[in-house]
Length: 366
Image: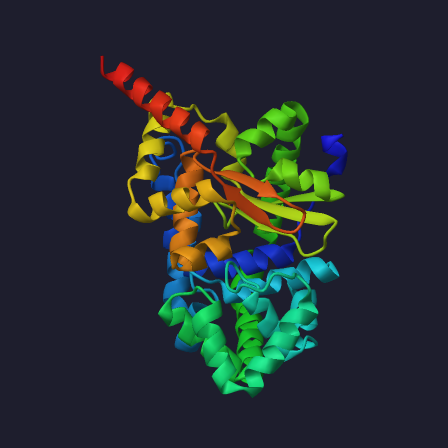
């Protein structure tokens, strides 16, 4: 049964990492609240909004610089360390930082390469990434070639990655310094409050799923949730105040998949849906030449995000935004094969959806 496969967790180590991301990417995260089907029903938590703005203002210059390098809103290199938390069941941020200190520099850099849509390396095996880093760090020519041809970051973030690979020891030292400073001066000051708040919202989530079952989960729009459920033993669900309307997903252990949901995200299934706005989402998603190119390519064959980005020469950040728009317009289908999520487009279904959406919009006008 579905409920028997779900495990509810509340690990401060995850909140700690999301805390850093929220401070640096606050403006990006609250953009979701401006979407037309959310703006009249959800507003960002004003206290959290003010906290994020004020915290960033008072950061020392060196911490602010490190935060920009490791938690840029396009790449989240530092978030690659999320995988360490799941691999070693590191519930507390102190455990996480201690484990990071004992982790090799090449392993840390390997986690950076696994972040987002960064490379075309197909295996999730950590050793493969460490071997790759080993080659890159001893051969400057291969390093430059790899970053240029095998990553799909922006030019700025490619330069950032080059700096990481050129100085592995310094990269590790800077990352640990950032984490230790942030834990002591930011996260620990709100830790108890976050724990109490998470406990309340996690209980709400558990109750919503108990009562609503698959219907509630479908309305959460968790990426390939039911495909994933068929391939793993446990779905871990968690909540965090730092995500708002967003979600984060992680699978390092092949028997476990983690979803972390923002507080407002768990309330989304209860919002009143405007059918007209749903139809507008269809045409909004179509109104961009790169999104049309994505649809054309996916109608020919399924793609993982990285292969799609390389095929169409779209950066990881832009591709992520385009995929979100297309998913919001219900124009994409996702398939999880036990290792990766692939996207595809059913051309006939797409045409039907566009035709029906136009008919409904014209009916609204009469």
